[in-house]
Length: 273
Image (cartoon, rainbow, N blue to C red):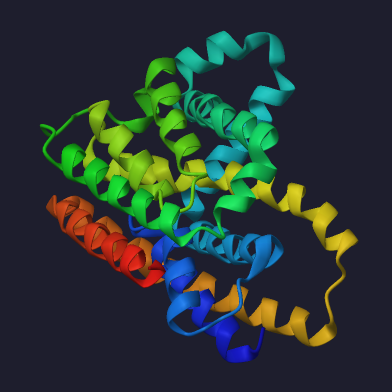
């Protein structure tokens, strides 16, 4: 993979990771359009690391609060129930932990099978159509009033199942988690904020799983440099995408992304013929 290809994929990853249009689906699409070699699992994980940096930059106060609350829970394990009731930060940490469980189970059990699906443009195109449908339905839901700090365990599980579905190429992680939050009556902006914060443990987990691949298949020096550059572009464009999506969420315009993902899904299917 050359420098141009790394930059293109970094920009695509940064924009589409947070916009509810499926980053994996667009990586497949742009790889086909520009005749770019499939980036592989390791490079894709590094692109996700770039978007993780974007989350830290955009939600630094929330991240600091989560770290402090998480440390408080770890140092007072016998008081978890009380802390969950009295401390909103601790309650949010526990909600993220519960919502992360489904994707951990799915990732461990079906990692090899899921990896194989990334080479199937037809499957990716079909799942993009599913993403559009999910966004369309969720945008029709009456505006909720629940804030993420007040979420219950059932809310966290429901959103976590949405994230678990997003391991499939073409299914947008941000799209399914935001949609799940809206269906559970979260406020629009809080549904998006929780979606972004929820991605942190998922991305960190994927980094751990990729360590084995990095050790097994060492990268050439030029490949490593291109990977770093792609990661930087993913971080910068990811930060901009977060700000853009928050604006769309506040205005209640998510349905626009459903039309877009339907179009892209059909385009992927046509290009696959």
